[in-house]
Image (cartoon, rainbow, N blue to C red):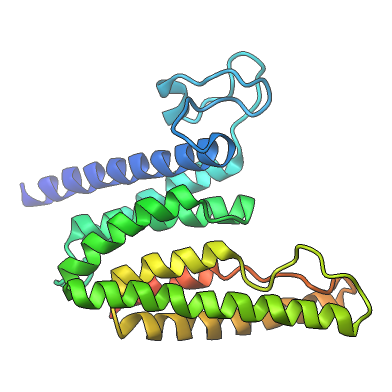
Length: 254
């Protein structure tokens, strides 16, 4: 009987993860386009999906356009990650419900940044509330606020230093500096959110880990572009994935 209950619970958790994936897909579909919660629509004909069509990943019944492959990948990945957190819970100080909440938030940030290269301010605002609640629960309000302020402040300094460096490099090459930036401002706001979650001094460790990981992966990627003769100067390297990876390691494993 216990084995049967375990299987039933596992199936329920998988379905919960499927729902998490649907939420991530929905927010990634509507927020970058409308900046608000609005009906999910077919990208081709703009016909709104019904909730049943959307959850079951149906193609558009009006024009026949299929859903993006990302939708299926997200649904599967979130089902498995939600189950993994249930089977192997994070450290005792991070309750499972909070761990699922962080997973959902990180998923929204990652998918939108992956497709649109932007961290929306609306997402950062929600993240600040979520991060403050989790950070105060885990580390106390002083550590949470200090971590949030320093996370934002450190990355803000790096943001402006990157801007100065890009302008200096452009002048050295005899080019006009455009809108290219070495670090996106969305990374700055996200670092503030992660600082609230991690608190001080863990946000310092997280930023260092993210910068080192981003530099290593980014260096290998640039080398690959050079070898293929596809390198372009002033190409910005996205740091959002590395910030999320660093924070996930510290929250779920440390």
